[in-house]
Structures are given as structure tokens and as C-alpha cells.
Image 1 (tube, rainbow, N blue to C red):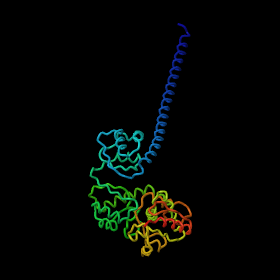
Image 2: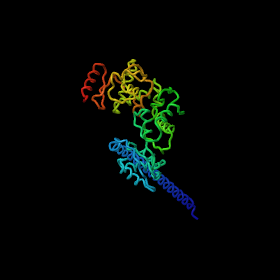
Image 3: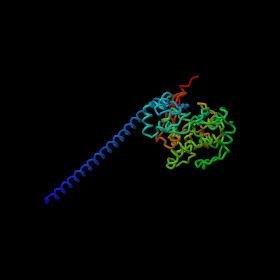
Length: 374
């Protein structure tokens, strides 16, 4: 027997083991590379998909966001995401079927949609639409109660009365005397139309069997949602109470016709409050008189009321309507400027002229009055 044979065999075994290790390492590296490529591809895919969705949803805004119409959408049983996207597109709820399908895929919503009747608004974004379609459907005979922004409690009472849900008297009585356990109401003083300002304007779906208490609770629930999401944290950075902020927001809601002017008008209100100057806001006088005329007369200004901001300095006794979220946010984040006056540019118009001094205001007021038609 050759003495070198064992040594040769050992070397061969070592070479085989070395080759096996190299193969294992190569395979491991290959697997890692493939995994990395897949991860990067998925991440890039998701990134580009999200970028595409942002662009598409911005296009949707141009197409659909001008209308706040809420419509009933029927989703048939067994409908696929493609089917649902087509239905939404046909009804003008979305601007792009593809963007909805992509968002559904990457959010994991595919296969989670329910069937039945859903009430969707054309101003919903894709996430809100997906969430709604994943929830419970509504009975086809659901009543839709839409409270416009800026409605007063009296107007809401008249609306529910007209719809035959509850009487206006029952609504007002429950609003003033009912028990509603919400933390944000703890410091609201008792007054006429106690919950004015907190009956959040929105679209509510009713069975038709609701009581006045039920309807008011739905509105307060919606206010609580907005309060928790947008108001509570911001309130801590102001020197005002919640009720004062809602009072300011209600005046902004009543005075502003353009969203971009809401922070500007809020700034005028704060500027006047800072120097103890009467607010002299026509809509507070209109609230005291229960009128909605554009022009307030000299006799109107003489009304004896804690809501008459021509006769009293500071804030009125409480909110003068139920403001929407945009006006509340404007009251929380007013524009900083030196304006103390504003007046409409033309009769029946929406845009205001803002002035820093009284002479400029009088000139703008004269220009506004010159637009009056007989």
C-alpha cells in the first residue's frame, strides 16, 4: 500500500469541502441579491405607484372636488375591484379607475369590499372611499340629512321639521334641555340655543326613526371627531377657550364666502379684540334679529342683545351659527396682518376688500355701495 494515498485522499476531501463551501456561499449571495432586487423592485413599485396616485388624485380634485353632492352607489355581490372602480368612475366619484385599483392593491383592500348601498360624496379622497366600501352598507331607504356649513340651530330645527323627522320644537327643546355627556361641552355656559356652534355641519344618514336626541348626538359625535383630530392640540397654544374659538369660527363662517379669505377675516377679528375695538360684525346683529339680509340697516344696529357687536365690545354671547372645519381651523390659525376693516367689493359678490385704516375702508365701502342696483 502506498503511504501517500491517505494524504492524497485527505487533500481531495478538503478540496471537495472547500468547493461545497464556495457553492453554499455563492448560493447564499445569490439568494440575498435576489431578495434585495425583489425588495427594491417592490419599494420602487410602491413609490412610483404612490407618486402616480398622488398625481391622479390631484387630477381627481380638479374633476370632482368642485361638487359636494352625495349619491347612493350600488355595489353588487361578487363585484371585483375592477368592477367597483368602473362603477365609481361612471358615477363621478373617482377620476381614474386605475389609480383606485392601484391604491386598493397596495393598501391591501382588494377582496375586502362589501356589497350593498353606500353613500359616497364626490369630495371624498380615495382612502375615505375605500374605508366606506369596507364598512357596513346602508339600507336603500336611508334618509339623507345634509346640514350646510353656517346653518343656525333654528335653521337645522326647521330642516328636520320639514323632512318630517322630528318637530322643530322638539329639536330646540332637546338641544337646550337634553343631557349630552361630551368632555368638550363641560365649559360651555348655559344659554339660549345652548349647543349652537357644536351641531357639526355634515351629511347624516337616518332610518327615519331617530329622536331629536339621536340626531343631536350624531352631530355632537361628528364634532367630537373633528375636536380630537384638529382642535384639541391646537387649542393649547391659544389664549382662548374652546367656546371662544367656536364663537370666532362662527363669525368667520357667517362673514367669509371664499375659503382663502377665512384666515384673513379671522385675523381682522383678533386684531380688533387685541385693541378692545368693537367687532361691528353684521352677521352677529342678523343672528340677534334672526334675519339673513346682506344689508344691515341703522335701526337693526340698535337691537339690544349680547350678540350685537356694534353696541358691545368683545365677543358675542356665543356662536352665531354652526361653523365647518375650515372656519374652525381659520379661528385657530388666523392670518397675521394689519387689517382692521373689510367690506364686500360688490353687491352679491364673494370677495372682500381689506383695509388697514378707516379712510381706506370708507373708500372701499363707497365703491361697494356704488354697485347697488335698484
